[in-house]
Image 1 (cartoon, rainbow, N blue to C red):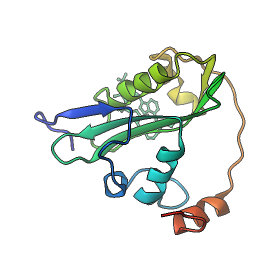
Image 2: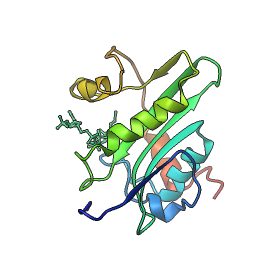
Image 3: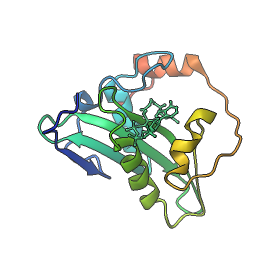
Image 4: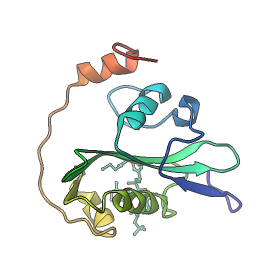
Length: 149
Ligand SMILES: CC(C)(COP(=O)(O)OP(=O)(O)OC[C@H]1O[C@@H](n2cnc3c(N)ncnc32)[C@H](O)[C@@H]1OP(=O)(O)O)[C@@H](O)C(=O)NCCC(=O)NCCS
């Protein structure tokens, strides 16, 4: 829980970040995503944006983007831990991600319509989208199949 004295560091690298700092994210997903799996995803992504509690090293907010490095980036995930929300952390994380994407033509993400006003705050425009989800693949990944660590 973020208290008055909580010092938060924002970073765009994985310096000092270990799997145990990333446990407990992906709230509401079809299965629990272990920290080591999330760390692999972050490591393979183009841009990361992390909010880290200085005192404990715990990652309290995470966002990342994958990009072709030429035209587009896509943001698959932005999440702030419960207890730390509503304090501007998600906004800061998104701004840090978009800053890293500023040479690109587009940065896209999918979200519920109710979240579009949140993303409008950082200059994003609501559009409609489409997606497909393979829950079997997610479960296999979380269980370690095909894992390199
Ligand atoms: C969305 C999320 C990242 C925002 O992080 P945060 O640190 O709370 O964001 P900020 O403090 O910068 O901004 C909070 C604002 O976002 C709005 N917001 C947050 N979650 C929302 C939701 N599910 N629906 C509508 N608005 C939402 C809040 O109402 C708040 O607005 P206010 O300041 O006018 O009260 C965080 O709520 C979260 O992790 N949610 C669960 C995961 C998720 O939905 N991620 C987005 C996937 S597209």
